Length: 585
Ligand SMILES: Nc1ncnc2c1ncn2[C@@H]1O[C@H](COP(=O)(O)OP(=O)(O)OP(=O)(O)O)[C@@H](O)[C@H]1O
Image (cartoon, rainbow, N blue to C red; front, side, top):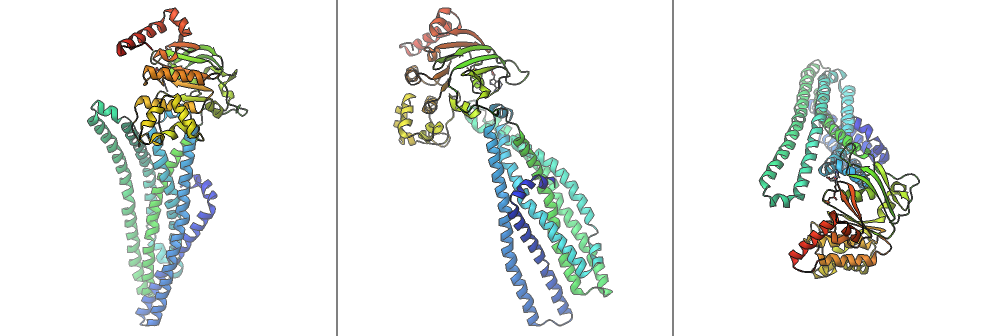
């Protein structure tokens, strides 16, 4: 029941809804006591031969009025209690989403997407059940159960009540035992569900790769295995779940048995009338639901507790990147000073960057070259504070990155990542993502600069073409250029193209670079690329190898060095000549 204490903050917040709901529910419980009483009275009238049509009609009218009232009241408490529970789910879901959106890349690297999705769906649903059906069963089992027992004891026979309820402690013992078994098994079932979620997410994202390699059968088999695991764990839950009903029915059966055996003796001894015994057994029947509700309550509460623990653990995860109290809110301009002694993604892991020292004046263009895995993207991630530098620092306008608020820092960057992402929205919306207030003229201008305008107008719906998962399929190069247009539209202080020209041909690349040279005057641009022609005009080019700068300079000075840069550049030029049989880029 600890989960109810954990949720107390919400019950307080919604005290009117819960207060109203509980009150109405208690009233319904009280009113439910009337029909058994009426049955007892009628039976006694029949036994004593005093039943008249008038008496019968009077009691029937009372029962009819009661039914209508209970009908309305039941509707009311549902609105109060279940309505509040749905609101709690909404609040928690929004909190989780807000929390996710504040977390750094390191957080998402440690967690699986499917797991996070399971928290936001299954766990929240279990908590909603606790705050809705859980409260209902708690209040119902206490009020209806309490009222019925009191009525039986006070209006019929306290002796018979005690006898009839003798098997109850057994039930309390059994349900608490089942409850703790359920908690454990439910935790495991939820973990298995998270894992399955993750599997589905990964399989769907990688479906093309799976098909290309003809791995469908293996994928289906591995999905089946995960799915079987979920089923197995849920069966384990269901096995305990299934114990509640028969146990409760058995105990209720014992209660009936005792009350009939002893009740009959009291009737013979004339301590009770037949009508009273009839009422007593009907009251006992009324106890079945509170008892079932009690068992069900354990079930709901244990699920809710496991889920609430999982969600709060997640919400408690500290943001690893937070603003200092006096953080500068003004977005920095692009004057860079890298002073990184070393960087690794996790403590104790292999160093990914070492001895990165260089400066870049405001408005300059930096080219970052190097073989795959040499640390180009990592260098950019440290600049954007996606990951904290533990050994060294990066200065922007002479201040360390953490002097700036995260928001100010992020608004300085226009980042076009390697794995570009388009939302399921129109092309115009995708381009205007970083500047939603942009008008069509600005969007088209950005698209022209990114050399994608001609492609867009060829689509039937032009800029209103829907792309992404639910829209038309674009080529890799088209997606890249839309991502570039998106970054250009925001006109950021620092534009970062992380291998963002890899899927466009040499001519288009040159066209885009030419636009950049014109519009990015006075603003800093960083370009990483495998095709070195993309950084030929940079003011500074650094070549990384195993996280270290092995060459630095301008294109001309690097060519004169006769090192890695010169070799790769010449090789690429030759390749381009052979492939296209045309001009070198
Ligand atoms: N999030 C991460 N966690 C742990 N290691 C990582 C992470 N991202 C990259 N690495 C590792 O860091 C090294 C540098 O990777 P990085 O992506 O910076 O290289 P890159 O030069 O950009 O490569 P590419 O040209 O292929 O994009 C690699 O060994 C990679 O495995």
